[in-house]
Image (cartoon, rainbow, N blue to C red; front, side):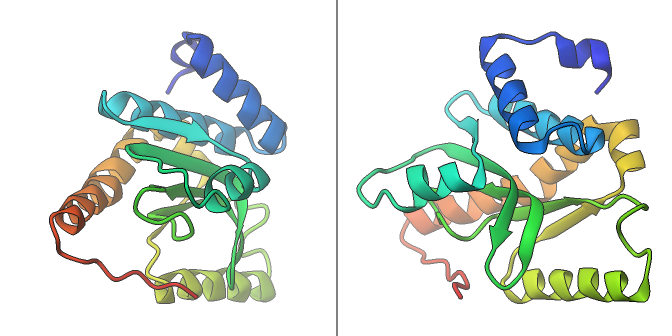
Length: 184
C-alpha cells in the first residue's frame, strides 16, 4: 500500500490508525503499515463481517473475560500480544466466535536488526515457531522489506491461505461438525 492510499481514510480508519499508533508507537513503521493493511483487507472483505483492533489488555477484558457476550462475524486484530508458552507476537488474528483464546494466525514482522543476529536469537525464534506449530496456530513471518514492497499482496495471502480456509472450517463446525482446537 502506498502512502497516498493509506491517507485516504474515513473516520473508522482514522480511529484504527490512532489505536495502532498508540500500541506500536513509531518503533516499527513496517509493522504499522502491515497491521493497518490487514485491518483494511479484513474489514472490507465481507460486508457482513467487521474487523476491530484491540490492545492485548482490551482483548482480554472486552472479549475473553466476557462470557455472555457473543461476537458473531468479527475479526479481532491484537498487535503485540502475549500468547501462552510462546511469548509476545507482533500480530494475532482472532475470530472470537470460534475461539477467543486461540488465534487463527500469528504474523511476525522480522526485521534483520533484531532477528537472527545471534545464534541465541535464532534459536529463540525457532523455538517460538515450533511452539506455535504445536498449538496448531499458523505463523506467517515477513520481513520489513517484504511489507514495504507489497503489504497488499501479503494481506491477500493471509486472506486466501489462512482466513478463508478457517472460515470454511467454522461454517462446517456450525453445521454440526466439531473442530478440535488445541488449548493449553
